[in-house]
Length: 268
Ligand SMILES: [Zn+2]
Ligand SMILES: [Zn+2]
Image (cartoon, rainbow, N blue to C red; front, side, top):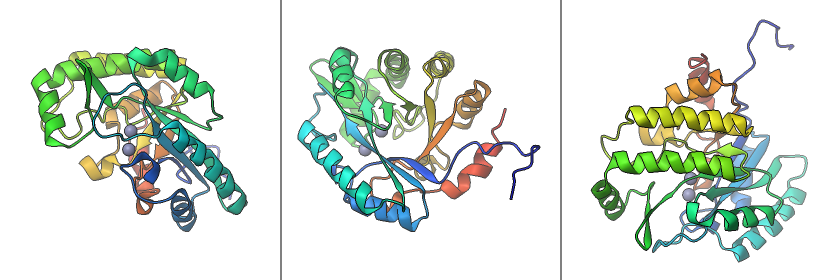
């Protein structure tokens, strides 16, 4: 049926999952093929692997890929493209973690491979000679960040993202407000809100999309980012891209059925 001229365009294409991980990152389960099969079963038209890249992060538990892992990733991705040709589009992307002390190296690594999508995140807070994990629920991580203070950490987090959006060649901003997602009682103050508006304006300037990350439904009953941020992004004309952030095959496309109605209510 033709879409009538009076009907607004849908705000997201829920036939495309733009963000999944695999066993390669060491904190997800499932092979690349198991994610492809899960996506085919769910009737998705497109699946984007967005594997973790971090450089010069000093953290005791590696949760990202090394260069040899990315070699395997591209070889296996190519193989799967042949096997599943005509059934589903398979895209090979990267979720790059910003590190202000390694911008040149990050740019170099991003230029080395033909990514279909480059998602930007910020997972680690530098402190002395180590990094603290902003998204972990480990008690020691939460304790370390609480000692610095949530307001201070969040001001740094948004300032770092704004710089990274300007300095790294990314296509997508991932889970914008997920930092400190496991810390109870975290609220954004006036400064943080102002920073988020600057961040969105910068995303728009760079022609990037904003991820609607449906893992948030599991953490807090609604996606990342919060509703007012989505409304502000839509007012700026920033395209939205849905991602399940699946870390196990059964989570591919999670809650995508809820997105059309949820987002429609946020139209500015
Ligand atoms: Zn992950
Ligand atoms: Zn992430």
